[in-house]
Each structure stands twice: as C-alpha cells, then as structure tokens.
Image: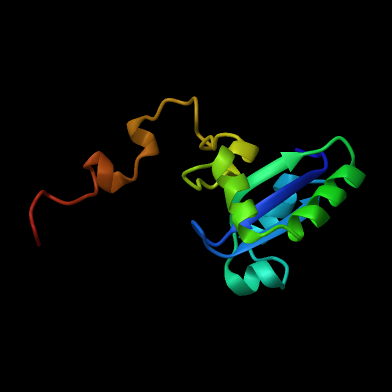
Length: 127
C-alpha cells in the first residue's frame, strides 16, 4: 500500500488519538505497532489503526493531515465512527489475510510432535 495516506491510530475505543501522514501506510503503521520509533505513539501506547484515507498526491495528504490536527476531538471521533463504528483495528485490512507458512499442505503424522502421534516411547503408564 505505497501511496500517500492520512491515518488515525488509537490506544483503544475513544482513547488517545494520533494523526499521521505517510507514503507507505503498511510500513508506518508497523513501526507504530512495534514501537520502533520513540515518540508520542510509543509513550502512550497508541497502536491501533482505526481510520485511513489514501490520496493521489503527498501534497493533498499533508494538507488533510494538517487540517485534521486542528479539528475538535468530536469531529475526529465522528470521522472514525462513520467508517469504523466498532473501532476495529484495520491492520488486517491493509496487510491482507495472514497465511500460515504451511498453508496448502496436508499435515501428516510425521509433521506432529512425537508426543501427539502417541509414540513418545512410553509404555502407556507412569514410571
């Protein structure tokens, strides 16, 4: 998702909000989530992506971000709740579904830990 975007992160529903702008939404949100960079979001635990808007140009994204930072809190909350009324974390929406490394392969008994296959060497009773 490499295109200019404005985004809002929250610490939880109706919690602390952060507004940012980026040219790479996935990378930037990951940095917030993993507390890679010191600053406001790390200090206040603001990691949940609750709203974002993509833009054609970085200039328009920056203008929107600057305007939103001047908004009243209730306007910011209304913006989130208009598209995300349950305050879901939108991280999976921007990254796509997580596919396990062994997806599409059939699991066999040989893939299981020996204790799960039932042949762990014990004779069936306590020793």
